[in-house]
Length: 456
Image 1 (cartoon, helix red, strand yellow):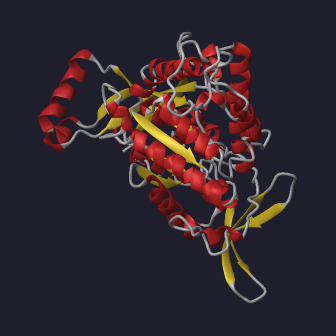
Image 2 (tube, rainbow, N blue to C red; image 1 turned 120 degrees about the vertical axis):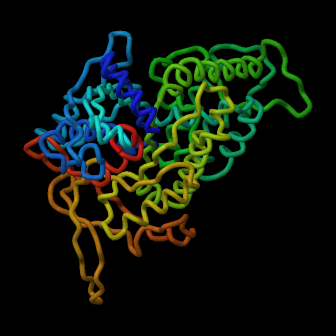
Image 3 (spheres, rainbow, N blue to C red; image 1 turned 60 degrees about the horizontal axis):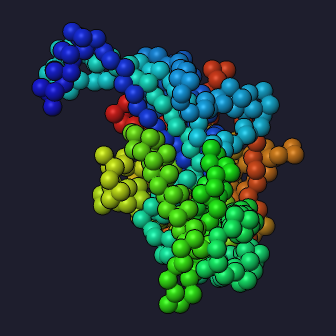
């Protein structure tokens, strides 16, 4: 280790310090708050130069080793820029949450960091001055759910999804699509109009599952968020079953949709996995467990299934991505349960434990609020019992208190837990500090866990 450190110091002294590029991916399940996360991360890094106490759990910041931070541009051939200025304006002058990003976007920050050199060499030469281009890649969480599909055949995927669509809570949202399938001869010659109606009905079913039932395990992800694939012909497919004992007919609807499925998976590998995913140095996955808990047992179970699939795909070895031939294993993900400010500090350990239980130990698990908008309070009920709670300003004006009766469960709750339904308030963001920083819960812990080589 000391010889490597000495060699690195010598190379930098003689040849100059090259700029390192470090890529941090940020994604999340529906409404998990990734736009707020990226905005708060940038704002607090910029503010930390004036006040390192903004990020005390990130050693490089707390110890004053973060020398400079400034926003950097991206090349014209790169992804669209993350709308940092508009997001900061929403949180600051307008006191509202920023508009969510719905496509892949990047934000680049140029950092200068003093990294300790270990052993005797460090005592002689001092810290290593590093120039780092931090690229924060914000991409839709719906695309993350495409990764488990890469190992499935059209037949296997169709059988699974048809069975799920015929069972509650999905069946009531799938009625229109399933009605079209009942009158369909899948061996008939493929016609674009027929395939389009089927694909659009299937996409509408997925949207209703997400918007009306808070379900999360929904794929293909590009049916919910196509981005640059909007209108592409290969999106004209949906789950289909062949008649028992039948073989596919050339040129049939079934055969054409299977070809589109294969093209979807090929493009996912070529246009997302290889150019983006394979280059990530760190991965933060956000999830709003409060929405799942408050929406009932079915929503929670679906979120649990989605997280299990994601955690399995992101597991370095022997995970799905490693089996797909990536040049390197994906980084160990950092899973974050957002809106940790919706429970008092006394319950945040339980929130992190619940997330850890759901991902099965396949990554770090942190309870986080990228922007903290509540304060802890105690309430006394009519029986004299004291209850820890939080209070904040809600949309429409006024202050409101909130708590989960009995606290957040540390493991998957029994179905009876969901008998009491919760209306989770939507708290408004606080005003940024004079330095532009934003109050948070454990944002610094997530940063240090994701990028220990930079901020540790």
